[in-house]
Length: 277
Image (cartoon, rainbow, N blue to C red):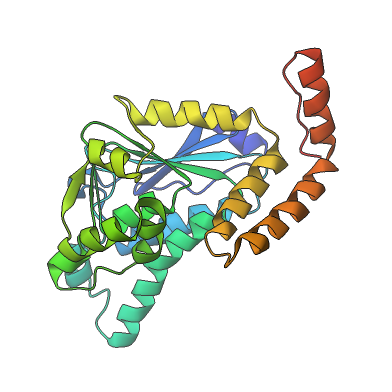
């Protein structure tokens, strides 16, 4: 959708010099971190800008997929330590804790979005940048993508911004322990091999948009419920509790008009026309 159409439909979304936001196709939004000279490291302003984007997306049903990426050669290098010191972002324990919560809430905010979030990681994703990538629903890596759990290398705990919860669930506890304790960097091929990323492709942004298109071919509520249940399953304590959750969600979606339309379209060998009803 063009910028003019966005204005006409009241679809304006927060876009700044630090976080550029724009439509990349029908029902698909491109969110680009834009501090390329700092490898898109998080300043206080960038953190606020990204929170504003998540807040604007929370109630939107006309946008169903989000591709998150970075400008220049990096995805996101984590918290900007220069900005952190020079700007006095965390002068007291209370302010430091507030900053910590603001950064961590970016990851939980992504999880709560109704949209599917696809991270197109073409370069370094370190520290908080890795947390953003892990918090996405899908990750696509470019040949020059690198992933680093770098907290422990700057004198901090390797368990930060949800990484110690997310990483073991993606790559297994043994690998997660090793990565968190050493803080070593892994390349794109290893990331795919251990399950951190889905694939290595020459054009991660283009591939992410293709995946978004595949997602959009499915019913809106079916996709939303799949994302919600999948994330909830990572916290469910037993298989039976997980199945109970699935059963209720499946029956609920079976009563939607879009389910009937999908079945009819399948039997008629045509593309379904979904209305999110």
